[in-house]
Length: 260
Ligand SMILES: NC(=O)c1ccc[n+]([C@@H]2O[C@H](COP(=O)([O-])OP(=O)(O)OC[C@H]3O[C@@H](n4cnc5c(N)ncnc54)[C@H](O)[C@@H]3O)[C@@H](O)[C@H]2O)c1
Image (cartoon, rainbow, N blue to C red; front, side):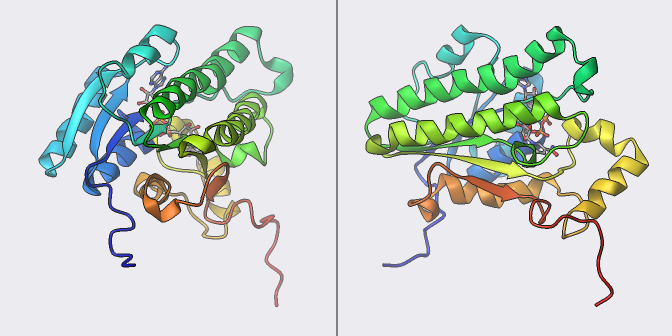
């Protein structure tokens, strides 16, 4: 067997939800570079169009669809008329950074509503579609290091990121017999609009840099390789797991480097 095409996505169709910004935009561009036709989906139509334009300018194939994970009918409509979906990537999430004692019911509903319920809706629709098409597929959801480790102010976001991981594991168990693999990616800290409030605070930004073994933040481009790996044949025996892409954040405790 030749391994030269292990990562190829030629002839595949990938739906990327959250593709207007940040990690989703980079994932959409990366999937197209590896040969997939990309359905660029987001609630932000203007951003989705920009991503699709970037893909086309790089010689790839892209189609734009509007999708709002807070609206069940919009999630169902996303898959209408698609011939096949080999890969589905889900990135939308929000964070309200606040201590638990200060968290309101409305803030809880907002964060859980998108990160857990919205992501669930998309997983359910993608899972149904891939089960019925009979040719399998790969579902990739963005969780976080916060599924494992927390700090003050991250409680509800962290709960959603751990929750979505359990949904990923269960869906992997339920869809394995249909050839559908389901995995999560757990980034550390990545420079995107989501983390802009942290970047704006020098002390917080630098503390995050020091925390990981690599001693810095990630750029969105560094999330692309793991997406291609999980999308392609290269990960054909990988399902129901989380792939941390965190520069070693969850491996080390980061307190101190002994003088050894
Ligand atoms: N950036 C980081 O440091 C980091 C770290 C760990 C995990 N993550 C996870 O990675 C994922 C992507 O994060 P990002 O930094 O690229 O975020 P981002 O805010 O840059 O992009 C999120 C995208 O989702 C879209 N979106 C928001 N609500 C939506 C909805 N209801 N329906 C459809 N689309 C919607 C937005 O329009 C935007 O294009 C998230 O799940 C996040 O929790 C990010």
